[in-house]
Image (cartoon, rainbow, N blue to C red; front, side):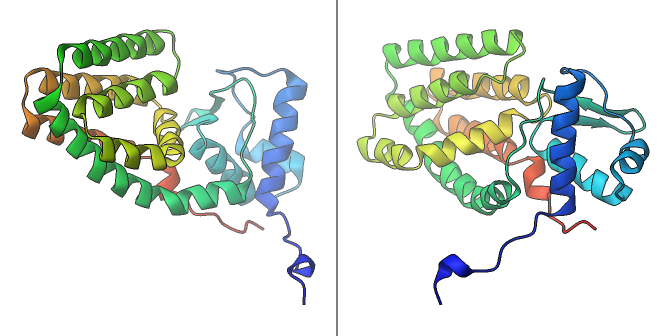
Length: 235
Protein backbone atom coordinates (compact mmCIF):
# COMPACT_ATOMS: atom_id res chain seq x y z
CA UNK A 1 0.00 0.00 0.00
CA UNK A 2 1.18 3.52 -0.74
CA UNK A 3 3.27 5.26 1.94
CA UNK A 4 1.00 8.26 1.51
CA UNK A 5 -1.65 6.37 3.52
CA UNK A 6 0.59 5.67 6.51
CA UNK A 7 -1.02 6.30 9.94
CA UNK A 8 -1.27 9.91 11.04
CA UNK A 9 0.90 10.95 13.96
CA UNK A 10 -0.98 12.32 16.95
CA UNK A 11 0.60 15.42 18.46
CA UNK A 12 1.93 14.74 21.94
CA UNK A 13 0.02 16.60 24.62
CA UNK A 14 3.04 18.60 25.71
CA UNK A 15 3.55 19.76 22.11
CA UNK A 16 0.09 21.30 22.38
CA UNK A 17 1.14 22.90 25.68
CA UNK A 18 4.17 24.43 23.93
CA UNK A 19 1.89 25.89 21.27
CA UNK A 20 -0.44 27.36 23.91
CA UNK A 21 2.53 28.90 25.70
CA UNK A 22 3.71 30.45 22.44
CA UNK A 23 0.29 32.01 21.95
CA UNK A 24 0.22 33.21 25.56
CA UNK A 25 3.61 34.92 25.32
CA UNK A 26 2.53 36.72 22.16
CA UNK A 27 -0.88 37.72 23.51
CA UNK A 28 0.55 39.05 26.78
CA UNK A 29 3.43 40.84 25.08
CA UNK A 30 6.00 39.08 27.24
CA UNK A 31 9.69 39.70 26.53
CA UNK A 32 13.04 38.16 27.41
CA UNK A 33 13.47 38.26 31.19
CA UNK A 34 9.76 37.96 31.94
CA UNK A 35 8.51 35.10 34.08
CA UNK A 36 5.99 32.49 33.00
CA UNK A 37 3.18 31.49 35.37
CA UNK A 38 4.01 28.66 37.80
CA UNK A 39 3.61 25.08 36.54
CA UNK A 40 0.62 24.46 38.81
CA UNK A 41 -1.22 27.51 37.46
CA UNK A 42 -0.43 26.56 33.85
CA UNK A 43 -1.67 23.01 34.41
CA UNK A 44 -4.93 24.26 35.95
CA UNK A 45 -5.58 26.84 33.23
CA UNK A 46 -4.75 24.43 30.38
CA UNK A 47 -6.57 21.47 31.91
CA UNK A 48 -3.55 19.16 31.76
CA UNK A 49 -1.27 17.50 34.28
CA UNK A 50 1.83 19.17 35.68
CA UNK A 51 3.82 16.40 34.00
CA UNK A 52 2.75 17.63 30.57
CA UNK A 53 3.54 21.22 31.52
CA UNK A 54 6.95 20.17 32.85
CA UNK A 55 7.73 18.26 29.63
CA UNK A 56 6.82 21.34 27.61
CA UNK A 57 9.06 23.56 29.74
CA UNK A 58 11.96 21.11 29.38
CA UNK A 59 11.54 21.07 25.59
CA UNK A 60 11.66 24.89 25.56
CA UNK A 61 14.68 24.88 27.87
CA UNK A 62 16.54 22.46 25.57
CA UNK A 63 15.97 24.91 22.71
CA UNK A 64 17.39 27.80 24.71
CA UNK A 65 14.06 29.62 24.83
CA UNK A 66 13.53 29.61 28.60
CA UNK A 67 15.64 29.34 31.73
CA UNK A 68 14.40 27.31 34.68
CA UNK A 69 15.66 28.71 37.96
CA UNK A 70 15.17 26.02 40.57
CA UNK A 71 12.90 27.43 43.22
CA UNK A 72 12.63 30.67 41.26
CA UNK A 73 10.38 29.92 38.32
CA UNK A 74 10.74 29.86 34.52
CA UNK A 75 11.94 32.93 32.61
CA UNK A 76 11.95 33.78 28.93
CA UNK A 77 15.34 34.02 27.22
CA UNK A 78 13.83 35.27 23.95
CA UNK A 79 11.05 37.69 23.10
CA UNK A 80 9.11 34.92 21.37
CA UNK A 81 8.65 31.19 21.88
CA UNK A 82 9.38 30.08 18.32
CA UNK A 83 9.78 26.41 19.21
CA UNK A 84 11.03 23.84 16.73
CA UNK A 85 8.87 20.88 15.71
CA UNK A 86 9.53 17.96 18.03
CA UNK A 87 10.62 15.66 15.23
CA UNK A 88 13.28 18.18 14.20
CA UNK A 89 14.71 18.11 17.71
CA UNK A 90 14.67 14.32 17.80
CA UNK A 91 16.48 14.09 14.46
CA UNK A 92 19.09 16.64 15.49
CA UNK A 93 19.68 14.78 18.74
CA UNK A 94 20.26 11.60 16.73
CA UNK A 95 22.81 13.28 14.43
CA UNK A 96 24.72 15.34 16.95
CA UNK A 97 27.07 12.67 18.42
CA UNK A 98 28.34 11.74 14.95
CA UNK A 99 28.85 15.40 14.06
CA UNK A 100 30.84 15.95 17.24
CA UNK A 101 33.02 12.91 16.51
CA UNK A 102 33.75 14.27 13.04
CA UNK A 103 34.50 17.74 14.35
CA UNK A 104 36.88 16.38 16.97
CA UNK A 105 38.76 14.28 14.43
CA UNK A 106 39.03 17.04 11.83
CA UNK A 107 39.40 20.19 13.90
CA UNK A 108 41.98 18.93 16.38
CA UNK A 109 44.16 18.01 13.41
CA UNK A 110 43.49 21.34 11.73
CA UNK A 111 44.49 23.21 14.88
CA UNK A 112 47.75 21.26 15.11
CA UNK A 113 48.54 21.93 11.46
CA UNK A 114 47.67 25.61 11.86
CA UNK A 115 50.20 25.89 14.67
CA UNK A 116 52.89 24.59 12.32
CA UNK A 117 51.87 26.21 9.03
CA UNK A 118 50.19 29.50 9.93
CA UNK A 119 51.40 32.72 8.38
CA UNK A 120 51.25 36.18 9.87
CA UNK A 121 48.27 36.86 7.61
CA UNK A 122 46.50 33.74 8.94
CA UNK A 123 47.15 34.87 12.50
CA UNK A 124 45.76 38.32 11.72
CA UNK A 125 42.50 36.76 10.48
CA UNK A 126 42.25 34.58 13.60
CA UNK A 127 42.73 37.68 15.77
CA UNK A 128 40.12 39.59 13.76
CA UNK A 129 37.63 36.75 14.27
CA UNK A 130 38.35 36.76 18.01
CA UNK A 131 37.79 40.50 18.22
CA UNK A 132 34.48 40.15 16.36
CA UNK A 133 33.31 37.41 18.72
CA UNK A 134 34.34 39.41 21.77
CA UNK A 135 32.25 42.31 20.48
CA UNK A 136 29.27 40.02 19.91
CA UNK A 137 29.53 38.60 23.43
CA UNK A 138 29.76 42.13 24.82
CA UNK A 139 26.51 42.96 23.00
CA UNK A 140 24.84 39.93 24.58
CA UNK A 141 24.62 38.03 21.29
CA UNK A 142 25.36 34.35 20.68
CA UNK A 143 28.10 35.17 18.18
CA UNK A 144 27.26 32.30 15.81
CA UNK A 145 28.68 34.00 12.69
CA UNK A 146 31.75 35.17 14.58
CA UNK A 147 32.34 31.66 15.92
CA UNK A 148 32.13 30.29 12.39
CA UNK A 149 34.62 32.90 11.22
CA UNK A 150 37.13 31.82 13.87
CA UNK A 151 36.94 28.15 12.93
CA UNK A 152 37.16 29.02 9.25
CA UNK A 153 40.31 31.05 9.99
CA UNK A 154 41.90 28.09 11.80
CA UNK A 155 40.98 25.81 8.89
CA UNK A 156 42.55 28.22 6.42
CA UNK A 157 45.68 28.51 8.56
CA UNK A 158 46.18 24.72 8.37
CA UNK A 159 46.71 24.97 4.59
CA UNK A 160 45.24 21.51 3.96
CA UNK A 161 42.98 21.51 0.91
CA UNK A 162 41.58 18.05 1.54
CA UNK A 163 40.74 18.66 5.20
CA UNK A 164 39.16 21.98 4.25
CA UNK A 165 37.03 20.11 1.68
CA UNK A 166 35.91 17.64 4.37
CA UNK A 167 34.93 20.56 6.60
CA UNK A 168 32.94 22.12 3.78
CA UNK A 169 31.06 18.87 3.16
CA UNK A 170 29.71 18.82 6.73
CA UNK A 171 29.41 22.57 7.13
CA UNK A 172 25.63 22.51 7.64
CA UNK A 173 25.91 19.91 10.39
CA UNK A 174 28.75 21.86 11.99
CA UNK A 175 26.62 25.02 11.92
CA UNK A 176 23.81 23.13 13.64
CA UNK A 177 26.14 21.93 16.42
CA UNK A 178 27.56 25.45 16.79
CA UNK A 179 24.15 27.02 17.30
CA UNK A 180 23.12 24.24 19.69
CA UNK A 181 26.20 24.92 21.80
CA UNK A 182 26.13 28.71 21.79
CA UNK A 183 22.54 28.91 22.99
CA UNK A 184 23.47 27.18 26.25
CA UNK A 185 23.43 29.70 29.13
CA UNK A 186 26.84 31.34 29.54
CA UNK A 187 28.31 29.44 26.60
CA UNK A 188 29.30 32.34 24.28
CA UNK A 189 31.71 33.80 26.86
CA UNK A 190 33.14 30.38 27.66
CA UNK A 191 33.58 29.63 23.96
CA UNK A 192 35.39 32.92 23.48
CA UNK A 193 37.86 32.05 26.25
CA UNK A 194 38.50 28.66 24.68
CA UNK A 195 39.01 30.22 21.25
CA UNK A 196 41.60 32.53 22.76
CA UNK A 197 43.44 29.51 24.17
CA UNK A 198 43.45 27.83 20.75
CA UNK A 199 44.70 31.02 19.13
CA UNK A 200 47.52 31.43 21.63
CA UNK A 201 48.73 27.87 21.00
CA UNK A 202 48.67 28.52 17.25
CA UNK A 203 50.51 31.81 17.79
CA UNK A 204 53.15 29.98 19.85
CA UNK A 205 53.54 27.35 17.11
CA UNK A 206 52.71 24.61 19.63
CA UNK A 207 50.78 21.90 17.72
CA UNK A 208 50.21 19.61 20.72
CA UNK A 209 48.76 22.42 22.83
CA UNK A 210 46.65 23.65 19.91
CA UNK A 211 45.20 20.17 19.35
CA UNK A 212 44.50 19.72 23.06
CA UNK A 213 42.82 23.12 23.30
CA UNK A 214 40.62 22.35 20.29
CA UNK A 215 39.72 18.92 21.69
CA UNK A 216 38.65 20.53 24.97
CA UNK A 217 36.60 23.07 23.03
CA UNK A 218 34.77 20.40 21.01
CA UNK A 219 34.04 18.52 24.24
CA UNK A 220 32.41 21.71 25.51
CA UNK A 221 30.45 22.10 22.27
CA UNK A 222 29.02 18.64 22.94
CA UNK A 223 27.89 19.53 26.45
CA UNK A 224 24.31 20.50 25.59
CA UNK A 225 20.92 19.89 27.17
CA UNK A 226 19.66 18.30 23.95
CA UNK A 227 21.78 15.17 24.50
CA UNK A 228 20.27 14.66 27.96
CA UNK A 229 16.72 15.17 26.72
CA UNK A 230 14.30 12.35 25.93
CA UNK A 231 11.06 12.94 24.07
CA UNK A 232 8.20 11.55 26.12
CA UNK A 233 4.62 10.87 25.25
CA UNK A 234 3.02 13.00 27.97
CA UNK A 235 -0.51 12.25 29.11
